[in-house]
Structure formats: C-alpha cells, structure tokens
Image (tube, rainbow, N blue to C red; front, side, top):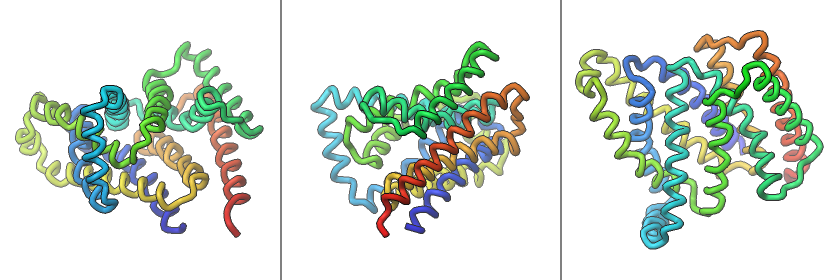
Length: 295
C-alpha cells in the first residue's frame, strides 16, 4: 500500500510540476503544447498496454466500435472531452488562467458528489452535504462579485463529469480507452505541429534547448500518467479518492507561488469556503477508509 500512496503522490506532484513546466517552453503556446503532450503520451500508453497485456482487449474494443455505432459515438464524445481538458491544462498556465483552472479542479470532487446524488441516487452523508453547501457559498460569491463563473473554471467543472459518466457506461479499461482517445487526437495534434506559424525545425533552431525540454515534457507527463493509473490499481478506492485532493491543492499553489496569479482580496471569499469544503471531504474520506480498512 505504501507503494500505491507514493505513486499517487508522485503523480500529483508531477502534474503540478507540469503545470509550471509548460510556461518554460517558449515560444511554444497552448496549441503546440497540447499537440506534443498528446503525441508523447502514446509511447507511455503502449508501455502500459504491454505491461498489462492489454493489446488484445484493445483490438477487441476497436473491432466492436467498428460494428457498434453507439459505442463509436461514445468514444468520439470522450475523445472530444478529454481533448479539450488536455488542451486547457497546458493552455491556461501560459495565458494567465492557471488560477481559474485550479479552481475548477478544486470544485470537481464536490461536483462529482452532486452528480452521484442526482444521476445515480447515491445518498450524501452529512459531511458531504456540509461540503457541498460550503462550496456552493463560494461559487455563489463568485457569481455575485463577477456576475459569472470563469469559462475555464466552468469547462473543468462541467466538462469532466460527463466524461466520467460515459467511461462508467462504457465499462472499458482505463488504459484501453485512453489509447483510443489519444490515438484519435493524434492526427489533430500532428496537424497542429505541421501547420503552425513556425515549423518544428524553425522552432528548434530558434531555441535549441527545446530539443531537451520537449522530451522532458513527455517524460514528466508519461511518468505522471503511469503513476496515476498504477496507484489506482494498487490502492483501495477510498484512499485513492482522498489522495486525489492533493493535485488540485498543488495546482492552486503553483498558480499563486510560481505563476504569480495572486487572488484578489474578494476572491478569497470564493476560495476559503471551497478550501474548507475540500478539507471536510478529505477528512470524511479518511475516517471512512480507516473504519473500513482491514486490521
């Protein structure tokens, strides 16, 4: 279990580090960063498929999708959704919206609780009700002060739940689905790199350091992905869910301390209730896990 915890924490730290690292890859902008991240994810997923003997299930799934139009449509929907999220994750830090995206990730676990209650009739514990209420206060303050929720926050907050719901309905392995999604996104990513203003060779000539930095981007992203999936397989679901709160907290502090997107005084009235809500959820999850953990 210690290995699983270490892998989950490593994944969170690497994804947070990636949030800052993409800002060092000038002159690459959001679209090019997205393209490189998609293309460099394929070798890591191939490694995972080989390790888990997943090539045969992958071939079976692709064959099914060719026959079943509904399955093919659902895979296209998940691909579009994860594509937007992957793009936003690397676009936001280089365009001054890292804090907005981090807020979306902070709210996401609470949104998933609401989705569970509304769509799957899951009962909310008292702690979850308190947490959702606190988060709602923070969001309400944001709406009253700004008159709207940032579009970047909304994309994370309302984009991921349908993605997870579709995955739940597909009942396919996470690596299998990710391979298909990244595979479908790869032609788009390749097109972005081929038709950008500066060619790949001009970009490397303009900044030779990219010859080392871009592979490092792939290594960080791939190791983070492998660690995350490996942790999900090694840990009890409850503990894995608790450790899932680490990443959004780290993203927030990366945005504040490294990217210098300091929240305004009024914004703290949005963040503080949400921080408390996340803490309530994490504590409740830890109590539940320890209660159910084998002696």
